[in-house]
Amino acid sequence: MSTEDASEALQGLSTRAIHAGAPAAEPHAPLVNPIVQSTTFYTAPIPEGEVLYTRYGTNPNHRAVARTVAALEGAEAALVTGSGMAAIAMSLLALLRSGEHIVAQAELYGGTLKLLRDELPRLGIETSFVEDDEWRDALREETRVLLLELPSNPTLRVRDIGALVTLARERNLHVLVDATFATPVNFRPLEHGADVVVHSATKYLAGHSDVIAGVVAGSGDLVESVRERLRSFGPSLDPGATWLLERGLKTLAVRVQRQNQNALALARWLMGREGVAAVQYPGLPDHPDHSRVRELFDGFGGMLAFRVEGGDEAALAVLGKLKVMRVAPSLGGVETLVSMPRYTSHAALSRAERHAAGIGDGYIRLSVGIEDVEDLQEDLHGALAAEVRSR
Ligand SMILES: *Cc1c(COP(=O)(O)O)cnc(C)c1O
Image (tube, rainbow, N blue to C red; front, side):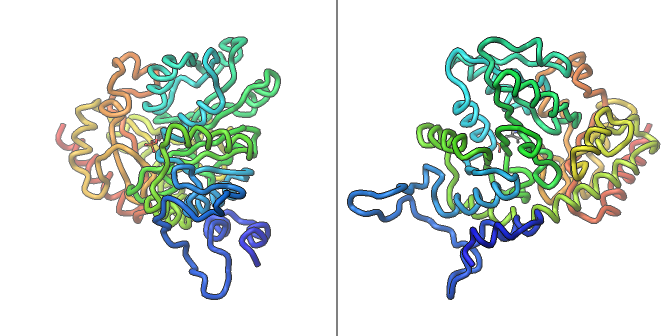
């Protein structure tokens, strides 16, 4: 059975994650794709058909990951890029020309915000940043793209994608979703009418905090248009790094399911603990988007945030006492990472701006890993109790 035949018969997400990108089952073929450390590939003297070249995202390792990502997202096609930022930038350059306009949700990953605010205007592409009810009012004649992150960082808001897709269809716009935080295990935006989904594969898809990568998935035409930008601007992924991403993807489903479980358990445990002022997690009934996430998502995710009493100083003290959780920015790996957005992603904002963005004093973000949840709980318990005692 060829890989194509096999992938058609595959149903579940875990099965697809493992088999969709695998080599064809032929005698003596490797079970696992080897790293194809080759920039170029033989052709006829007058090349027939597609010319493969590693910068084009057509190295066999790229193609294996693209098959897997397309199968996971339910997309016609997918493409691997050198980073999450490359995935976003190349996608936007494929969708927009000079003079055109983006409407984006106000709370975005810092790198994306910088791209939209500082880089794209130099190419004549402007962005309006909007809150929940302002999308329609922000539309202009030149608007081409609606851009959102599901869920957003760090407050884990999930915008009404149904309403935005309806608006986009009405006005002939493209909906681009950065679903890095959701992963296809928890949410697949294309199933809900989005046109393009991008991931920082650096996070959950690769999952081991050891490779920078990005992916784009959507229609065949769109992915080819993104590939044109990849060819011209050049941010392609090295085959070795692509192989690490390919390996990581095979365990995506079990990792994310475990991260969902661990995060929900920790969120519930943190509620009402001494020293904890508030907990933000889409799986808790008091999260503003809880019912939407329940309806649309298959899991609440591995990211959560909480505020400690005593403000930033107390939060810093808690971070200093953790023994299992690691203090570092980034997310989505097997190890639990903890950070304070006040000093990392949102350091440039004033206190009032941070509060308006939902980041109160003493705010701590957790990227929950796959460790034993009892150990994570014990770690937080020890750090919080020591902080409360020291007051
Ligand atoms: C990390 C991240 C990015 C950027 O990805 P890189 O792989 O670091 O380039 C984009 N969007 C979101 C939501 C992220 O978390």
